[in-house]
Length: 257
Image 1 (cartoon, rainbow, N blue to C red):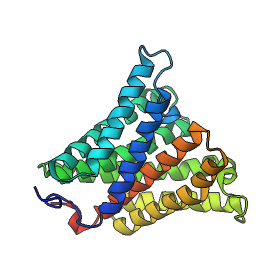
Image 2: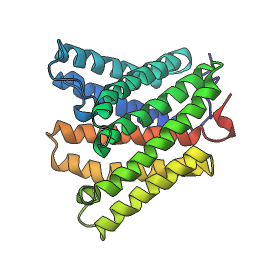
Image 3: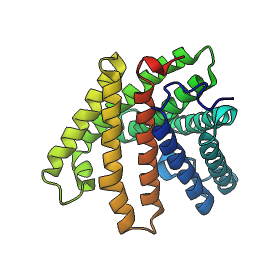
Image 4: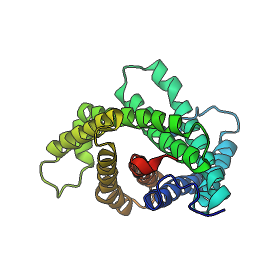
């Protein structure tokens, strides 16, 4: 099978797909190495039976999905579906938490981050496999990702001081930057939901998230190389950036079969 036979947006998905594989695979390696889940992004109860075994198995599946995503044809399709199912599992873990605390923006943020990743992976999997429901899944993914971006913006507004504390000290007006990035998330979410300049909005969202990776998370990892939390935040941010890139790549006319 030709590697590009089912590519939903030939050429445009290449870099986001590699980034998705790197992010998800690295998170899997962290689970394999620690025998644990990815902190608040995989909120598995601490009293879950055989929790360490489940975490290790999940990490192994995440690594497998990442490797398959870098291959071609049917193997890439398998990797895309596996990544989508795993990330949908992350989403499911957050639903009970949100139901218990529906007024908590922090809990909605966890759901939104995982939903953004899962929706992009599922959209790509359906398009690559060429299934009949790919168009409907694509439309649903735009709703999920756009709604998630709105939550990102709301979280920046709600926790502006904390967001500002994450911004490098050498940048001026950090609180203003926290508000600005929150507004950027929200505007991107509206554009993705409504379809107005959707591709441009998603690419700008991807670029902003990639900026967070470079300016916020990489320096924090370099400052605390022994911190699994910092490494986890880095690769969650990479995976989110990749997801925005996939949404952007598949937002144009070439994004459907």
